[in-house]
Length: 272
Image (tube, rainbow, N blue to C red; front, side):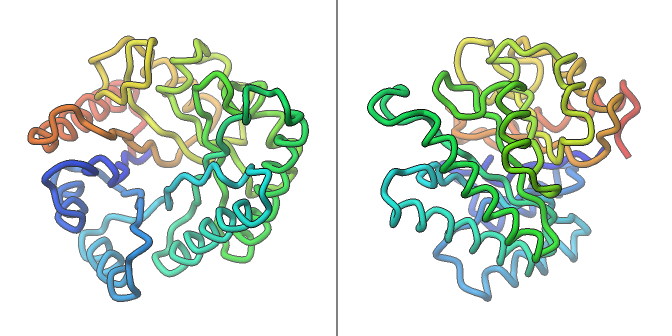
């Protein structure tokens, strides 16, 4: 496995966007996931691509969140889907492998609007994106979110969603911190053998969505990584750290996450 980092780790910190890309390589990461700004011009994308190529740091995934793609308003839904397609276009240019999508949550706590209708809107959107991604030679990775009303928030709903989309390039993004928040044990990941396309890693105290470096919470990150290795996953594990409560010390925060994760991966002998 490779150890990567999402560059959203620097959001809200003094680290400038392009400087943050360099910092990720300097800290020691193998790959990077890009959370782009939609104000970027073609020359900004070219700069990102050139920087990553010169540093030998491949771009693994394009990342953003458009839960509006399950909106009951067709024009809002279309906007979200088209934004994701723009991310796929960016990803093609920068040789990324994946697009990570966030489905969102059931509106109004599964009342008023039937949850089956909202589920189908998400399935239809993911299918459309997967068909477009296939033309781009990319995968669509479905993020497992830990919130009570999230459409996909455990292995059961992930399996059902992937089955309903029924596209070979629509795969699971296994967020280990989210699994911990939902009290999903590592062994449950065996059910997703052959269907995991990406992994996010952070720690938490099992009460709220903390996004801490490993070791600050109580998630069995070693156990999750061991099972992933045993079911044949051998791709990127991306550190996801966002909205650090101490922005001035963000470099130390990301470095700590890198060192602790690298230590676990070295212990398991799974980093390549």
